[in-house]
Image 1 (cartoon, rainbow, N blue to C red):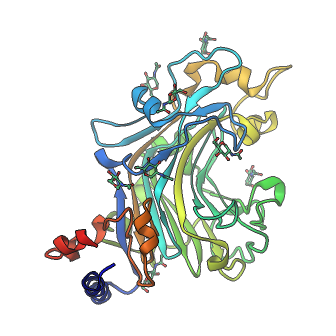
Image 2 (cartoon, rainbow, N blue to C red; image 1 turned 90 degrees about the vertical axis):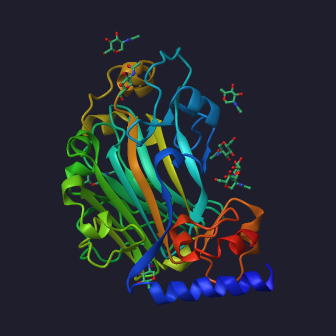
Length: 371
Ligand SMILES: *[C@@H]1O[C@H](CO)[C@@H](O)[C@H](O)[C@H]1NC(C)=O
Ligand SMILES: *[C@@H]1O[C@H](CO)[C@@H](O)[C@H](O)[C@H]1NC(C)=O
Ligand SMILES: *[C@@H]1O[C@H](CO)[C@@H](O)[C@H](O)[C@H]1NC(C)=O
Ligand SMILES: *[C@@H]1O[C@H](CO)[C@@H](O)[C@H](O)[C@H]1NC(C)=O
Ligand SMILES: *[C@@H]1O[C@H](CO)[C@@H](O)[C@H](O)[C@H]1NC(C)=O
Ligand SMILES: *[C@@H]1O[C@H](CO)[C@@H](O)[C@H](O)[C@H]1NC(C)=O
Ligand SMILES: *[C@@H]1O[C@H](CO)[C@@H](O)[C@H](O)[C@H]1NC(C)=O
Ligand SMILES: *[C@@H]1O[C@H](CO)[C@@H](O)[C@H](O)[C@H]1NC(C)=O
């Protein structure tokens, strides 16, 4: 990086300092509309992580089969194939995509969706995972996860040993397990179940969807859910920055008191996936407690559901936007990110600057492109 570029960076950083509002975090990227799918990697192989009965399609299958696409109303669809009769012993196509950018401690991501995948055998999630280390070295945050027909969202962290929920007084959800260590509790992490049934399934959709806010801060990790009618102004008006101070009691809060956030979490890549059956959704006892019939006789989740396309009409995400706000660096998918200095580079990724601070860079754009 040249001296002149460093000077320009300095100016930008100091102007950020002057204009930034106490308590707020600047917008660094918005995934929405026609560019929603531009910066994601498609998994492109079978689900070897949760033993689900799917192949996570590659980019070309996903676009040819319209498993991921933008609607006429500018929403993004991520779906399981609901038009193929799958031959016995083969798997159904579905989607897992991972963001090419990752976001460090000091970030907030806001998912605004009108529909989440559900249905018997369906197991969707919107989550994040540390990019740079062997799992669970840099932590995993499950913002949204549901199975089958209900009943509400289940959040969780998965970490190395030493991170746990120590106090339950500051959030509204119901704790399933306090230890976040990835290999405790049958690998289920420190789960917290939302008490609001509108956070998943048919109730989420009939309420017009809603917003999930995930805050990865040094003081702790917070997850809020707001049904469409309850979305506060601090979220709907958060166009350049977000202030989470007055969002109220979160559904889940993992305090730094029980979990050293800087130690257990690194820059997070964001992930959407929909699997079918597998280790959680596919168990007979789970099916029968989440709104679906228990499996009968020698039937499996696979033979009961996966072969028949008509089971998957509701197995899709429909997303208005995914916005990321960040104080810190975000590591991008290009060699240029390795040139990041100790400057607090804000959302520099893939060698380009985020839309969030472009406004501040009017007049500097020509120089910035040289950086
Ligand atoms: C970003 O920095 C501001 C100002 O220091 C702070 O109030 C805010 O909580 C930070 N955001 C996050 C997500 O840590
Ligand atoms: C799953 O398959 C991918 C692609 O072949 C591979 O990179 C990854 O390590 C596998 N993961 C597991 C948990 O086996
Ligand atoms: C995508 O997946 C399909 C189905 O497995 C395969 O035929 C095709 O070669 C893959 N395309 C690329 C570009 O990998
Ligand atoms: C990085 O970006 C390139 C081009 O967009 C893409 O082909 C590649 O899969 C990405 N790599 C990762 C690890 O996301
Ligand atoms: C978590 O707790 C909720 C509420 O008590 C319960 O309905 C749900 O089945 C539990 N989830 C798991 C995975 O045990
Ligand atoms: C798929 O399920 C529907 C609804 O239960 C049923 O009407 C249809 O016959 C099934 N199709 C196959 C190929 O089994
Ligand atoms: C798949 O589901 C969508 C709704 O999610 C529906 O509009 C479409 O008709 C279904 N496709 C088939 C082939 O039934
Ligand atoms: C950088 O991002 C642009 C726009 O998303 C993309 O076209 C390009 O392939 C990316 N370059 C690399 C090296 O990832």
